Length: 298
Ligand SMILES: Cc1cc2nc3c(=O)[nH]c(=O)nc-3n(C[C@H](O)[C@H](O)[C@H](O)COP(=O)(O)OP(=O)(O)OC[C@H]3O[C@@H](n4cnc5c(N)ncnc54)[C@H](O)[C@@H]3O)c2cc1C
Picture: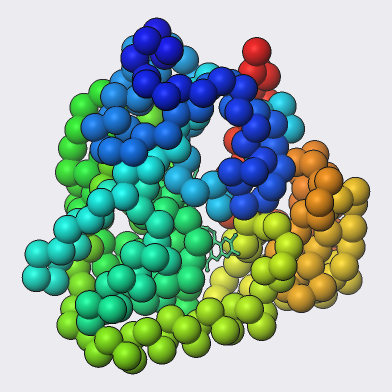
């Protein structure tokens, strides 16, 4: 059924090269949805066929198991956007940094805090991505979503946004199709400068030369970053197999070439254990694990 319905369907596709972490096994079936219609059709087809389904954006916040993902993996590559005055409507697959730079070029402000957050608009909505005390839900007006097989537009108040969370994390049957943001007029050069300054700051603080998913754990609070707890537990530079706690930023669990998802999972468990022992804090993962504890793909 998938082969018949989804033109361009690929089989047994290695996911590691498609994921920021560079690890993980294959997708049993992979489909790149280049329009919102194609995304809706792929989701409905998988559901109709009773096939396990994973919708991904740019895979910058997922850790895929070494066994890979059973069923259909859909990459949201619907990227169009329209601007009406100060309202932006953008499809889920649009890449956030490129979009925010385009908006700054047009003198539209509001999302510049996200100008260097890798990933797609859909992924940013699901995880309520943010930085510097701001998050996408602050500027969101509505989300066009697919709930099982029916489409709705929901206001942010109905979507349970919180620190790196939303209703989408609890209900994987929801798919983000597009989002509407409320922007404001800003000064083009000031906005572009802000994005460039943020990029420079990130280059100086983050180990961008290694594969990672950004911050692995949520911060227990703004005053108590997870990185400090990990550093205080003496774990900077701690390595298990090909996975290592970054020397530069302790909340980045980086993957060396040849690392496996199993290495990263083992390192995360050890970091949690030692932080719990040292400080009593239970670290909670920000990254989404996929394909663990599921039947392996055929
Ligand atoms: C170097 C680096 C720095 C980072 N810095 C930050 C930062 O400052 N702030 C921050 O918040 N995050 C940061 N991240 C994490 C990541 O960039 C964000 O979480 C991003 O929003 C994820 O988007 P994505 O498209 O890659 O999502 P994915 O990784 O593809 O998916 C994440 C989750 O969302 C689901 N999903 C994705 N698209 C859809 C959709 N259309 N419908 C339904 N579900 C969907 C997936 O199934 C998965 O569960 C960083 C990551 C890296 C590698």
